[in-house]
Image 1 (cartoon, rainbow, N blue to C red):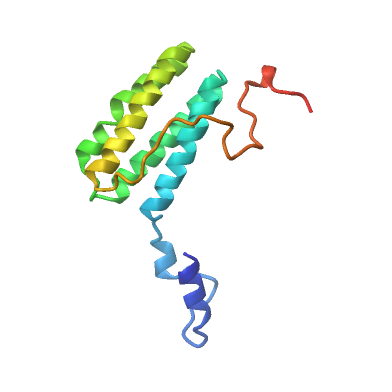
Image 2 (image 1 turned 30 degrees about the vertical axis):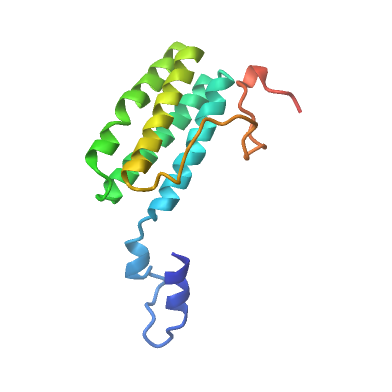
Amino acid sequence: MALAILASVGTSATAQSDFEPSPTVRQYAPRLVEVMNAAQLQHLKLWFAGKSKNWELAAFELRQLTDSLAQAAVLYPGIPVSNATTMKDPLLSIADAIDAGDGRRFTASMRALTDRCNACHTSLERSFIAIGLPTDQPPPANQIFAPAEKAPKK
């Protein structure tokens, strides 16, 4: 997108008026790596929300992750349909665990989802992209994952 904007800056006499976006900007679709980077962060945040038993935040992050995976499948038809559909069961299992407030089922379902992510990467000859369950405080260290009633007061 930045390249499209920069490219349009160099044209003066033929530039579009009234600040209309260029056709390339209007047709912008995120690159697969951008969608997957968002999904990776959502996976991480979903994990920490669930481990902190902040089920409301976990449900939110699960919706975000599901949307990102759907976006990847829609925008990139080179991803086999079978890869997208294999995500359904672990995503539903995570949703059920969140609804039940079941930490054990949440952990098992997250492991299953993570395994499916890696299987998808392998099937696309991208096995060098390996996802695991987080082990430490996540990079967005400014986010509080504990439910509001348990969050530290500042």
